[in-house]
Image 1: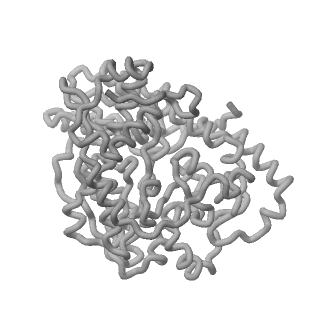
Image 2: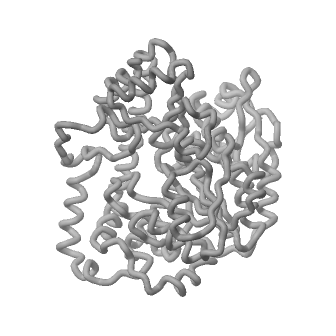
Length: 479
């Protein structure tokens, strides 16, 4: 029986304490592959917590790939010990981690109303993830801007270093530590106006002779950017755990660009066993690197966000990328990447002549927004809002899908789901979408050849208000 001391006074939630203990037991091989865990009821009784607490802990452990559930049999330990051992045995010299002591700690509002056009191209658009104006904290942002214009005039007019304003890089480092468990130094962070710009910097840094690999399918802009820069790029198919390792080894690229937290468009979350395999693969060759695009990483609705590849990486092989266009607004073109320590000197030597592409005033405003806690509260509010929208979609689909011809496939993360239409209903579904002016994108569009996904569609919900969802689902089902 699993027994350890639950500490109510601990800052961590009870279910996270249970998660951490079981993960440590698995990593240390005290809980072995295939070993059965206690039932939720028995473990709850033994630890003196509720069954719901244990259920939440087990759900988090399953999401991270540490355990699996077998119907009518229980919960069992997954096979990760050998991968962890392989990864740890291949560690290279470690760099001193960045901690809170390295000076990081020293440093509902009026809603925007934008009138809709009288004539819209689409009745409902399920394809995009445009942020709604009412979700942006206009009043808070305006207050911060006024404060900066009054008090930070010198900083606004000072040319920033190529990597961006120091104040913002410190704020991002602090945020990554508290929210994603990532220990990075502000000197590793590079600010840029959008991830597309940062992709270009990475290519210039790593070299044009490298072979770059992307997931297949993937966000269409990524391979286009690599192609426009004239670098060879190959596509690696996915399985239910993430990138297929056999295909990756066969193609033998130098750089692998992936979205492990929530893949677009499939919604796949890379399991922890596959993450260790990818880290081990990268460490087999000194020229290999992983680009971790943390797409939708903030929007995990059940449990805490999964650990990033960067936080698991002990070999300095992961370039982490994220953007504020998803969490704040697509029009706020501020993105950033975290470079491995081993690439910092080379970056400074090659790129120091560049100017940072984000205006100082925007960088300082965002730094204040993060430092004063507004960003964390905004993410929490948006996560709750998006979770409610997902639940409303599922609720109304059961009400209006009289033919039971539609099914939603969703993960615990991200701002889109996959809608599957029974093939015998596909033609009428498509005709209805065309007649009603419903914009919905087929998953098939992201593949170069015909696949079995021709009856699956991407269903974005972030651009719809809660009041619109019932009618949007109802119209979708009228075929």
